[in-house]
Structure formats: structure tokens, C-alpha cells
Image 1 (cartoon, helix red, strand yellow):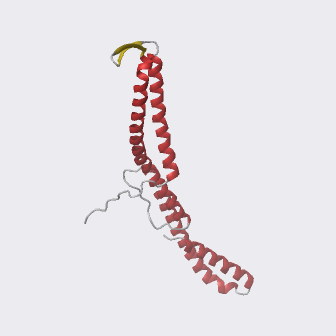
Image 2 (cartoon, rainbow, N blue to C red; image 1 turned 90 degrees about the vertical axis):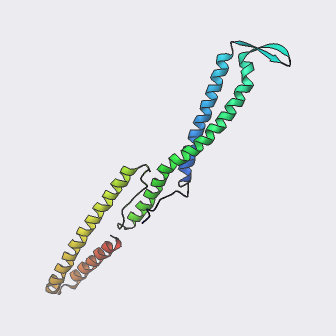
Image 3 (tube, rainbow, N blue to C red; image 1 turned 90 degrees about the horizontal axis):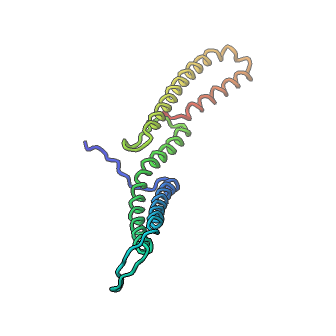
Length: 192
């Protein structure tokens, strides 16, 4: 039997989180480029360079000579590195945002009473420890629910034996039966 391969088809899962994550890294790249440009300019301001322009020798400060080349280089490298950063951070953020999205959906499911399945995320995604903890929590809830169901069955059986003995007090009998029904409804809410 061929093993099912989980491939990503949607890259922006938590758009807000992933967008902020990518923008922060791109701003870091741009800031780094600007710092390098300013430092190179400031470090070359005190030196001079002889340049041949239009067949004439001209003496310029090295900063004035390098400035146009520096701007072009910074713009080109910033664009290339920003594109690479966007792609890289998209995939890195996906390994975080994907599991967070799944956790959110699973918590909603557990909150609605569905304890029937175990939680799994892709092997290479982040937050594996959190997934294991969530499965432990679901298993403990499942066990507690099973124990409550057993206790409920004992209570209902005991009530069936005791009820005929106290049938003279209708109000108490009705209250107990109402409470037993409420407990049953609450227990039936969960899916194990």
C-alpha cells in the first residue's frame, strides 16, 4: 500500500501572522543594506580617487566616486535578498502557522465535546511537544469521561433500585430523575 504523502497546497494559513513574520525579516534585510551603504560611504569620505571620465583624469573623493555604484549595488542586492527572504520565511512560518491553525481547529473540536481522535501534525513541523501534550490531555479527558460514564451507570442502576422505596415523595423523585437526566445529557454531549 502506498504511503500517503502530506503536501502543502496552501502557503498562507495564518495570513496575518505570516505576513508580519515576512515583513519583519525583509525590514531587517533592508536595514542591513542601508547600514552597510552608510558605513561604506562614511569610511570612504576621507580618501580620494583618480577617475578617468570622458578621457580626462578627474580627482574625486572615493565616496563621491562609489556613491552611484553603491546605490545600484544596494538596490539590486536588497531586492534579490528580500525575494529570497520572503520565500524562506514563508516556508519557515508555515511550519509554525500550520500547526497553530491545526491546534486552533482541534481545540474548537475538543471544546465542542469531540474526544474521538488523536491530534497529529506533520513530522517536520514545529510544536511537536505541544501536540504530544495535547494528545495526553485528550487521553486523560477520555479516561475521565469513561470513568464518569461507569459511575453514572452505577448511579442509574442504584436509583432504579431505590426509587420504588421512596415513591411517596414525588417532588424528591422528580428532582432526582431530572438531575439524572441532566447528567446523562451532559455525558452524551461528548464523543469518545
